[in-house]
Length: 221
Image (cartoon, rainbow, N blue to C red; front, side, top):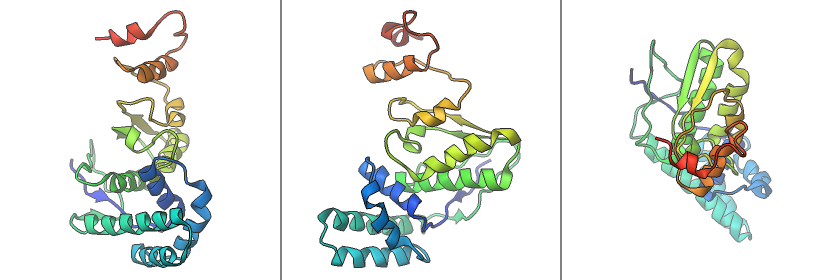
């Protein structure tokens, strides 16, 4: 069953800095305090956009000017993007297999959608559910944050006792966060032909050293 896209506006500074880190592809911890002040007490995207523009106008830091511009530009684009598509504020699963198609959205919107879906799965549905997240490197990247990272980890660490499980699919092990992978009891590993991916694949194979090498992974059918 196709289900509606679950997307909520957020004023959570952790979420918004995750969006910025995802765009810059690096950690922005030193700037978190300033960015959190922009979002503190905000009532929605329009309020944050207004504050970011005001901060951009008065700050002398070139980087912070750029960060504020990126933040309000991002939120303005998200507003425009989501206004064209019908969305719902809460996950609406059907009996059997539910699919939420999000390919038409930007990466930033996709990350928010996955975050919302995982939060609702843990808070509302809780039991006897498997969530499958494909192309996981986009939502739980290695080395920097995304809005979805914390929500995915919370389901992985808290959901199993009620029968709420996560299946992760990714083409690129090197750029996928390893913490969620540590919690996966079963791993299906396939052929790789890039040195970096070969190394990360072999790292996940028990007792691989001395038994398997790069050629073994490259020659898998």
